[in-house]
Length: 501
Image (cartoon, rainbow, N blue to C red; front, top):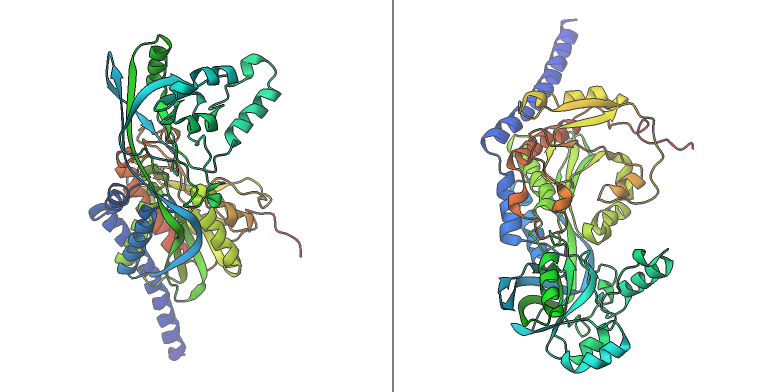
């Protein structure tokens, strides 16, 4: 009898020690989060040393290697997973523009990625694009060496569309054909694009709302080759400056513009990769808790908000867990830094399609792609509530200014989505993986506006919110670690309607 009592006592002590160890890791994460939080250090390096990270750029390759190196240095298993390749690469250098005349001003502008730079500093007069064949023929002789103001308001896309085609103009023509009246019609930009280029213009200039958006043509990038590249600068200029210049030209005042735009292409193909870090589980290594963000970013800014605010916390989460002694969770914790989200979720789609066997064994996929706000809670199905409350114990008091809450989601189970959404959780959800994500809140009232920065030249390091970023790294690290140590995978029946066999 005493033998069995001893066995029972040993068992209870072992259970208690495991529980204590898990709580101790949580406490250590929170302590390190207060005293040695490196989230903003990661963001500084990512954005101010590496910068905007287009697929196909040297900056993206540098970011891959930097992230992989950090994860390895902290003791994670690391995989660089090749997702694909682009036929040519693109690196953005400095750009500068100025207006001269009866007054001078420095110009605020961007160019879309994968578009041409200037051939050194180029200076020339300014013309307004012709609206008819007759007008084109009349001004044809003046076009050589001139900058041309074109119609329309930029949404960030290139006019040339990389292959020298008429994609944008075709969309405008179709829109005008369907317009109910003339007031609904919009101007066709660069109607004589090819002819003006052949006549020797220096480049085209289009009005753009501030902040300035600069995108790139992911659809036609695959058609590029190093021997057939865009060769005419495509400038998106602050709409107030554009209008001032246009008014001067219409009044026949003397105006000269100069631009020095250093956009550089490089021969491809250029491969791009997902970076995957694993903290391998000791009891259930083939069961997973996954946290992801996208590593690529548009390059008119430095990619700090979209999505450095995902990359930096995910890095710090991994570091905190390892530094706090959480290197042996029951289940495997996976940190994913996806390639090509801005192209169309390429990296996460690739991973889901090539790891179908893992999908039924993922407790939850947490995605971070919503800016530098605070991951201050979770809304979970009723049959998750008790587990998640235990997993987040202590976070409610971690920062008195930012209360952490767990709430029940009483909505009924929904159909598994059939179409991808706007971020990397999409293909996981389409395959029945839970994608419950953290609430992204602004309890300190900073009035942060994601869409005033998203995909623009304002996407910079100083647009982040350090207190929220550091807080997020801690709350997510604690939650992920403890979910990995639950007795079960989180159930799916109150999230998705289960198919009958």
